[in-house]
Amino acid sequence: MRKLKGPLRTVIYLYVVAMGLFHLYTATFGSLEAYLQRNVHLLWILPLTFILYPASKAGPKDEVPPFDWALAVLAACPGLYVIFNYESIIYRVIQVDPVTTVQLLLGTLLTLLLLEGTRRVVGWPLAVIGGLFAAYMYFGHFLPGIAKGFPFSFHRVIEHLYLTDEGIFSSSLGVSATYVMIFLIFGGFLEKSGIGPYFMDLAQAFAGHSPGGPAKIAVVSSAMFGSISGSAVANIYATGTFTIPLMKRIGYSPTFAGAVEAVASSGGQVMPPIMGAGAFIMASFLGTPYKNIIIAAFVPALLYFVAVFVMVHMRALKRGLTGLSREELPSRISVLKRVYLVVPLVGLVIMLLYGYSPMRAAMAGIAMAWIVSLFDPRYRMGPKAVLDAIHDGSMNIFVVAIACATAGIVVGSVTLTGLGFKVVSLIFSLARNIPFLALLLVMLLSILLGMGLPTTAAYIVASALTVPALAKLGFPALASHMFVFYFAIISAITPPVALAAYAASSLAGSNPDETGFQAMRLGLLAFIVPYAFCYDGGLLLQKGFLWDIFALLGGLGAAVAIGWGIEGFLRRSLSFWSRVLFLVMGILCLWPSTPIRFLALAVVFGAYIFHRRAS
Image: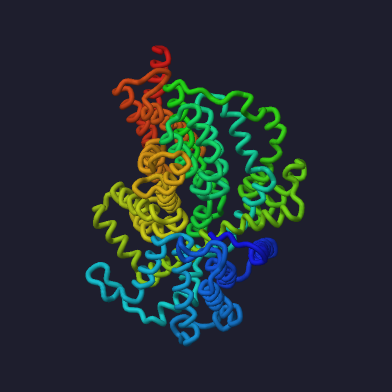
């Protein structure tokens, strides 16, 4: 991103604040009609993309060349046309009223500039995928075999992408234009009001002194911060700059330190209540209240972090690593005195669970964050701090909005051409109607897409292509979407292209691939739990109170058993067969059969007692 100076920097600051204020206004007094809201949202963002993001790494970083100014002006034209001709667009009959020459030119221009903006902001992979899906709508009928598509005119393709809410302006961009934008501003207020730093103090005070304390600080702080940021890489640079040097200082290897931060920061995206943009899009796709996504995500997220916590604790005990001294850590009493800082998040969760819309809950959270800031002179938010919070939160929208708009091209191509049905047929053919094999194929596709795409874009593309196949095989819609979402996130720690591991290794000074494989090892449970909740809705709290509790107990048993098995330590080093026993019993603790799960829990508990007495 360019670092502009002088009057232009001030103009851009005011522009971004105005963009944030517009979205706050529509969140408070009601959004515009869906197609118009999404169009205005992209109109704010796409032109600014060419001003803030250079065309290449070699491009100027402190000034905007004339070519980029020209692209910014051109990027505004399609949106302005929609605003000034909105009534004629919404009253036109799709496939009946002709697409005018102006509409054809502007629609083509928008598609090309969006793909170029995607290349600059998100990267080549998503831009190429978007371009291929757009081209498939027009050229697909030339392809052979199962890939052969229906013939569509160029006018029909542009109409679908530009003049309807099923292409670029699909529900994916709608989520960015409403929920995500407001929650990003909410995140800006959490940081400026001192709540973000408080999470780090809280993690340090209660986890920093125990064995391997810095690693536990990384796990706890990343879980809390990552839920707000919704980005693994952003989370790593926010918390890892502090935790990774501390982990290395007490004796963790650079590879392990980087892996802990990578796996914890990636897992922040599945931690309620916010979970980044993907969870809002999931709620939109499913047509379900967002609170249902929060409830369903709770147990898998808990198991994810319990397993990582157990492994870093066992690694510390095995190597005799200590924690930080009390003098280096915040006082627990002083931290508890500031516990009022969690009120905005607690209030947000309560409002969501009581059925308030995410936008209204986020607006209330913003107000509460401003109020609690007034109690601490260091973080008291005056007018300048409020504007800074709006600006800083709004600046995080570019990746999400551009990715969602381009993912809309993919979704639009799937809906127009029927490509989704072809993918369903392909999955059925390869899986031979075996549900588990279908899950395996969907996992591989989700990870493959996620290796080069942001989590949100990877989830949108993968779910559009694969969830219908899982639904036909009898898997619940919520579990199917959550399955794809999980593996889109896990792709950030899956070599050879593990973006979170790369970011963490840059801070740890370790080999990126070694860090990625170590992160996979720490996050092993995250590769197992999605399969488990597809067969057992209790892990998503969907089966009734008693069954849900038993599923939770089984999950916790799996988390600790797999942690002991992976690290090979439980008060003393474990033998090979003891490690195998814990790993096998850990997997069986997730088995969707009450007798098998009960037996596995009993074996894990018995083995724990045996090793405790023998040590």
